[in-house]
Length: 399
Ligand code: GLV
Ligand code: MN
Ligand code: MN
Ligand code: MN
Image 1: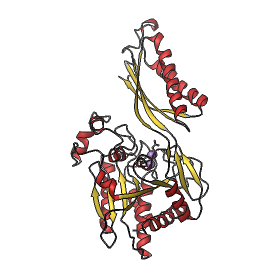
Image 2 (image 1 turned 90 degrees about the vertical axis):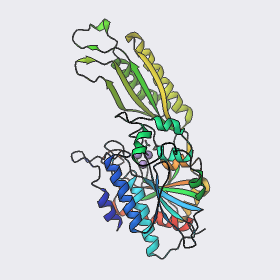
Image 3 (image 1 turned 30 degrees about the vertical axis):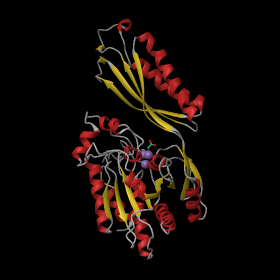
Image 4 (image 1 turned 120 degrees about the vertical axis):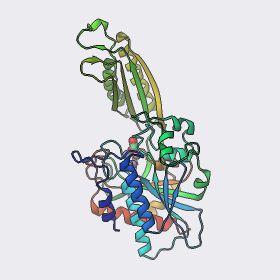
């Protein structure tokens, strides 16, 4: 199976025929189909498939001496954001299988295990917390909190993973697995406009987080309720969206309100409640924190005259990740000098960096668009990514 053949197999899975966007949410049928594809690719190559307790999968190529420790892990994720692109996640996994094939064709015999990981719920599109699989593995989220997370249909994470054959009480940090891994290198499509060469190496992930604003007012009739009698939560919500943009401009950050829930969501009903999610990111911790505080303050000021209550909850926060310098230098040296760049996107490699040396390779994205169907990498750049990943794995798995 060449890269392009694997790519062609995955391409239709979960793709919207009209928009071309992907809907591969953790443990929904399209994502399960991607998982089955992953298991097939592992089987086809004689790799050992490991299911960890947190819904992550690893396909292992073990060295001839049978050692199971000191492993070099690569991989990424199979799930997508709503209407996402084809490359965010799957590029890292398809490239990993192709890199293993290349090493085998060249007769490489690794001295350490090489693993290909597929991490669960990286986008947090179903349960709200990004990188949930790697967070659980690394001990970066309380398993009790994870069990209680709910999806849009009201199903808990515990229920969903139970139905997927996992024990919801066994989720959480996996010291045995972490103890077998020496380092993790994730290949990913670049998601902005920062990379002009085919391949680059990540320096850092900027601080980023998600916050939920709950505006509660009073549902009422859109025709019979006079303006003075209304408690309309849509109004402070609207202020909050503008405030997010203004706070981002003041603080040198970026802020996005990309998801909203309106109750009861009727044309002729004043809403009783609006829930809005704020995604804020920036170069420094205090700038991101200040952005969120300013948005909160603006929302409260706007809510008061309408007698609407505002509640703010932090759903996740990831501090700046500076990738391990020694590993980054070694990866850079294996590639013979490539651009080094930071990113505003979150990744499992960022979460795992708290427990392991991690590094990332980026593949150029000529559209500069991501989390949307236009996300892209040219075929020649995909192959450059595979070559680069193979060189890095070859180097790291020597000893
Ligand atoms: C995930 O891709 C994120 O950065 O939100
Ligand atoms: Mn993403
Ligand atoms: Mn991703
Ligand atoms: Mn991501």
